[in-house]
View 1 (cartoon, one colour):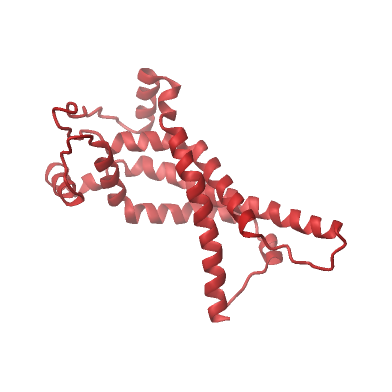
View 2: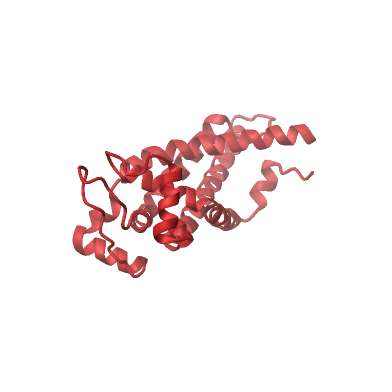
Length: 222
């Protein structure tokens, strides 16, 4: 097995993290998109509920929109996830490099014989927190557009509200234009703060868990 030390990591091009993150996010999105669509629909239907379960929502989508309905909004989602995942992984890697360089600088100033510039769990947490915050803040308007596509024509109980009208967005650029015309710039940033509150700690925990799991698996085979 090939093992990379911090020094090896610093020798790699930082752009690889942005590219590999974008490709990984794209592959994961295509594979899991129907579940994301169902989650959004179930969360947006209000009370009283029209769909009692994921299965009932799935069956209704197949009946009314066909199998293609499970991928409604996939285009805008891919346009969102490619920069989002790329920025998240790239920002995390950039922060790691800064932290490694800082550790090395701090140890050299302490006249320490140690050359270990590995990161602590708190430093990894900070890197993940920064990555989650920055990527979500930059890409949130694309997430808003994606969800608008996903809930087009969503059924709602009469006590809650009428069925959402199908806005018939031609494409994501047309959706952005309509949102700006009817809601202004704030319309593209609806729900930004809750999204950051979710994404920032989620990114931190994800990357810390990833690092420690990778180290643990590496120790098992080394």
